[in-house]
Image (cartoon, rainbow, N blue to C red; front, top):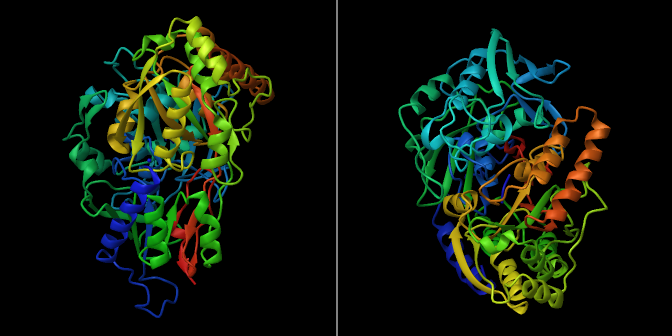
Length: 556
């Protein structure tokens, strides 16, 4: 999953946020003596608004945090870990070539609208995505489909990848068979993605009456994805309301859920964009949990009796460079100069929680395929100036985009980090023009379209394979980066096609070395994000993939 203000601004906003929270939806705990929590409300604060209630149209963690409670994919990850386990499929297998995937489905599963789940429903979803047209083929809308399954039945966008998806067959009501043209490192992990979670066929028919419009960084999402009432999954909660004015999404327990029922009846996700605002809301009792705890707040909260578990490192934060937006970036010396200009160690030391690491490549060292032989670019302002002069770019000017109203697991305080990088670049003689953009959808759409010469973004792994990191950006042409370098694409693609696990890891190492030699952007850091809960909460198992299941939450 992909991808925030000065301390003064955040403090002012925090006070306003807490004031609004006090007049909002109060917790209903205590109605039943606080025993078991069946009729309680649990309020959790995220850092940004979801972009859509249809996860197929999204690529960001704030959206998936909400939709994951209502939608389920064929496969899931074990609670608190990264091992693949059955989701809507009880078991799965593939042929030796990795091109035919057979899923034995759970029976007696219902969608929120009462429709029955079966193999025909699985195929209806996959065929629905495969036959998207128009704006749906934009990478800003169908990012994950294209990443996992390639293009569409009829590609309209010249930049859309060739389709790898071939077909889905309902062999019988409890058996779905999905075929692809070629084996991929994205499978079976891709079958666990929220973006490929299964919707009710009845809902899909309703979706077809509406369309996304626009292109690049000016996308208008379909009405159904912006209002509760149409979307229907199979998860332990169903989405009942999205109050954009109050920045709240409300879900209610789905009593016909096939698995363990949610322990808390009402689940509310509230957006509080600042770290201070979220912390103060928890301390005031207005919320019962929040994500992306400021490193400076961890000890304070723990001393106050709050629970602050830390996830394992499974992300990467980077400085992106768009060569099409700024042609000067096509020069290797310029990219190298920017890399030497940034003091990444200082960012890790001053902005990240304990356990944060300076990155040397586009994957954390917890993923197999990490190489200790990549070319490195240590902080060196003088060398940065020399490289810019050698490239004839001593007076380089760049537009630098950064996101507002959000923090991310890999990026605790976006504006603070931006200011540090801006200062570093200016010391090297680079003129920086700041361009702040609201996270969703403005910032996400702009970065996807390559509309920012420089930008800050990151990635939390979706599943445990090196291709989920480097293949996300460098398996082929991507507007975000705007470069066409066969050596990079070939190295990443070759690794993805290697079927022997040991050889694949070695191929990932070589691909990382090729990427860092070319240097399309600059990996900055990896961070272990913390999440906080109230004193009286039994929290869910925290996930290195940030895939917490809030149906596990109860009150003590």
